[in-house]
Length: 212
Image (cartoon, rainbow, N blue to C red):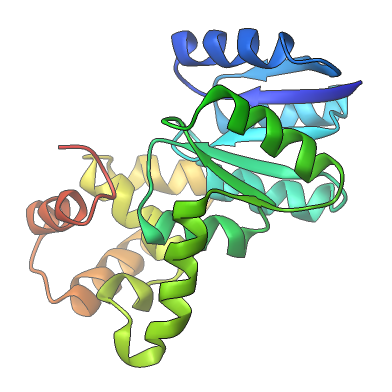
C-alpha cells in the first residue's frame, strides 16, 4: 500500500483529490494538510511514502516545502500539484527536488499514475511539461526571460508582494528579517526594471505568477 500525504489549501479540492486517490487500488491517503507548515508536520508524524504538494499555499509555499522535505527526508518522493503550467513553476519545482509535476487540470488517472511512478523511483512529467523543458534547453542562455534571472527566493517574494502581502508577513513566512525582504524587493525592482509594488503586481499577472 502506497501511503500518500495530500497538501492543498482548498478544502473542496483536497477532498476531491483524497477521494480520487483513495479509490485507486493500492494507494491510501495517510494524511492531509491545508498549508505548508501543516504538511511538514504531517510528514514528520505519518512518514508517508509519497507527498503530493500544492505549489501555492499559505505560509510556506510549495517550493519551500519541497526544499525542506528534500533536506529532512531525502528519500521521500515529492509530487507537485498546481493550477499553473507556466515554465517558471515547472523549472523551480524540479530544481527544488520534486520528482514529478501534475496540473490540477490533468485527468485523475494521471495523478494516480504519477504517484505510482515516483514511488517506484521514477519521475513523472506530463507531455506538455516535457516539451516545455525541452524547449527551454533548446533556447539556451540567449532565450532566457527576465524571470530566469530571479532566484527561487526572489520569485517567491515577488509573488507575495504581488498578492499584497506586507514585508512583515513575508518575513514571517520565510523566517527572514524585514530588512532582507526590503533587499529582495529592491533587487526585484532593479532586475525587472520596475518602479513600485503596483508594477510588480502587474508584471506577476502578465507572466502568470498570480491570478488577476
